[in-house]
Amino acid sequence: MYKPLLAIYDDESRYLKAFTDFVAADNNYNFEFVFFSVRDKFIEFLEKKEYDLLLINANLADEEIIENIEYKEDKLILLSEGGIKEEFLKYPVVYKYQPLKNLIKEVMKEYAQNSDFLNYSFEEEKTKIYGVYSPVKRSMKTSFAITLGIRLATNKKVLYINLEEYSGLDDVLDIDNSEDILDLIYFSGKKKGNSLFKMKSMCQNFNGMDFISPVRFPEGLKDISDSDFKELFEKIKKCREYDCIIIDFGDRICDKMSVFSMCERIFTPILEDYLSRKKIEDFENYLVNTGQEDIQKKIQYMSLPAININAFGKEYFDVLSQSDFGNYCEREFGELDGK
Image (cartoon, rainbow, N blue to C red; front, top):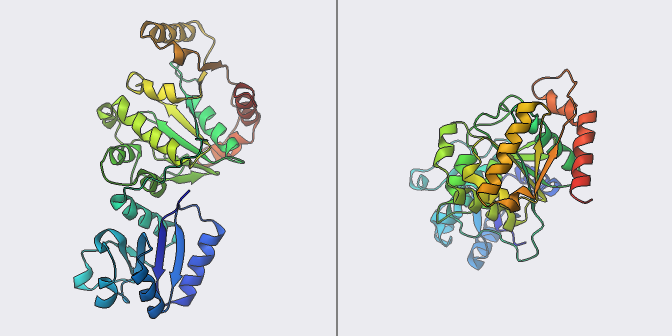
């Protein structure tokens, strides 16, 4: 898959060495990187116009360098040590002395705004979408979804997306709420922009599993149509960035039925009491009455084992994923997925 070329120009050799070592150890940022510390070499590179994005130390940027940049409004980001010349204030800026992981995410976010290239692959799609949903409350579906994601992430690239109105996961996953899944959906619907880079700039990681922050304001979900959800997940699939996407559905499923159709399987935890069985019956009747028997065939009901652990906060899923419950989740997935 093609990766955009990001050229970085800075005259601090130790900084460039640290940057080079960082991306060499874990380049999961969808860029190819090239580094320059010598001005003449960098200008020679600019004249070839073979770059997609430039990150230039603001103290080294001058008229000659700027004039050599084609489409500078879309391709130039300044690397600031604390101050910017007045004539360069119109360009996006990232602060140099911050964790490189955060810096690269800021660069990805800026690139996403102006790039239309979506990194689609013409190879066979490898990404599979799995849904987790239950009309039964207190069925432990989120515990199942995240535990499954953590277990699969030991040998697969996994993305977890929670579409519940109230996920309860802020402290458990130590979530950065600066942007959430609604921001990604709105961005995906724009005519201009790179949804993959936007998503990667928002991704957080927990125990090897990537995730997008759940909604902060649940009323925003009512403004998102079925086609909006479908468009986003189709884009993610086409980019082939992940092996598995696990979608943890909330109560509002009527406006997400096309996403249900995209799922390989829909794991549905249930309880055995009378009213729980009646809720399952109502759900099945709804699918039949609305002509969605194809979705009904994908549903796999399961009675989850009890959770008997004494852990809270970020430790909850650390312990749960290594417990008998974690073993059950992975074993059940393997059997039901035909592995």
